[in-house]
Amino acid sequence: MSDPTEDSGDHWFEPLADHMGDAYLKYSFTRGTNQEVEFLVDALELSPGDRVLDVGCGPGRHAYGLAERGIGVVGVDISQTFVDLANADAPEGATFERADARTLAFDQEFDAAISLCQGAFGLAGGPGADAEALDPDAVVLAGIARALKPGGRAAVSAFSSYFQVRFLEDHDSFDAAKGVNREKTVVRDVPGAELEANLWTSCFTPRELRLLSARVGLTAENIWSVSPGAYGRNEPTVDSHEFLLVARK
Image (cartoon, rainbow, N blue to C red; front, side, top):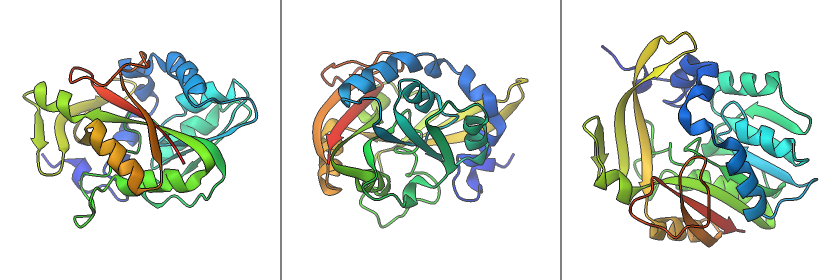
């Protein structure tokens, strides 16, 4: 059977998003959105009236939470399906548009930016990646940095290389040279119909996140170990799924 993610137009993730649609919000990792938003508001020192860029916003779950707190949000995603879902019931102050995180056109327009749960940062290392790039995800982080006003902060989550290698599963294949994990999986739509798929996720160490931040003009202020729905100020460990980078321009 051919894999639809091998030939998917602008980005390999698009056909997966088209298939999942609203079912994306049924996955367990989305259930802690409110806790994550509360933590981000505090960590990024956000206030009503601030403007936030949500890169890889999906159907808009974090953007909704921020807008409901009086924070203006522009959400961008490669998937038109997700953008349409986000716009369908968007709260006041939240707008959504289709954009490729690798070619962001914003320039010093936002007080803060987020890219969470591998919605954009972390997805650039799969098919179509720039083979000559030092790190394909650097262009995503560079676009985020460019979008920030001087002094603005970014919060970016990233899969942990330590965890991925330590707990590698049978359906995973980790490319040690590139730091990219390929997971063979199945995604489902709302009625439950399955689609076989590959997920390519770039993985990082805290040191790599600090170096990558510096390369694009950001200063890494904190890197914490986090899990979906359990964001906190926890020192990095080898046992946590993700790291959360908070960096200032």
